[in-house]
Length: 267
Ligand SMILES: C[S@@+](CC[C@H](N)C(=O)[O-])C[C@H]1O[C@@H](n2cnc3c(N)ncnc32)[C@H](O)[C@@H]1O
Image (cartoon, rainbow, N blue to C red; front, side, top):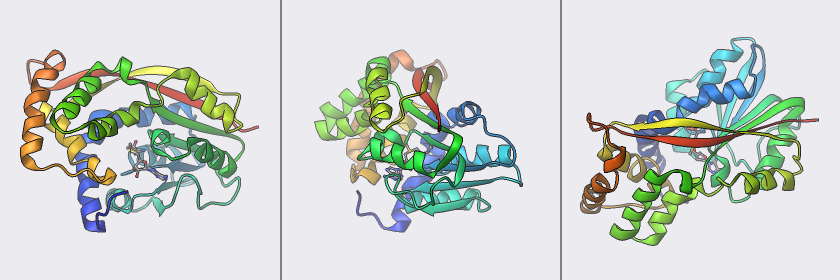
């Protein structure tokens, strides 16, 4: 974990919310809320809520009779989440030791968090524990890099311009994309009856530079990776070439993003 103070964490989280969330994450919030069949009056937990994109969508759906709690390990993400939606309950906590009683929620969701946990199995068991019987567990996980040639190309740029460990940090969010391996993680957590749908979304960054900045300034510092301006410039120049095939005439970078949505109802 990084050594950043709260103010620095918050600054990174602001860039995440401004550049990365709208380009890559936000379109999934409604899809996940649909998959979880969120209804008015329900009490919902968003695990690894980040800046709260999904929790905000859920809050609209459950209305004032229901409630949403967002839990995340990163206080900077939670500070931004709280500034945008202070009416939601945000709590600092670890997905692998959720700070809630058994059977507290009607549904538990986790959007693009599973790949980041040191033990996805433990986190899934925790999500099941806090879910009431009959409630839905819904998670979203990116497909593998083999199906995302754009991010694979950018990772190669990082490997050439910086080093393999930074390139591997970029590859990591796509490390659970194999469907069979993903199903095994659920089975090992004791969740054998799952439904897995692979859906396609579209990433859309306003420019190559903003795609690079979304990673370099929007989450790399959380992982302790701090790159200087000359290095960022060199990465951007090479990424302009590597991403030519994904650039539109208007300069935006657009590409399909496969995502596995896994749902399971607690018996
Ligand atoms: C890719 S972001 C996704 C955030 C949000 N769900 C979204 O869709 O924008 C992953 C989030 O997982 C959080 N995270 C990573 N490890 C965690 C853990 N062990 N417990 C709780 N949150 C964790 C990070 O702080 C980050 O906010």
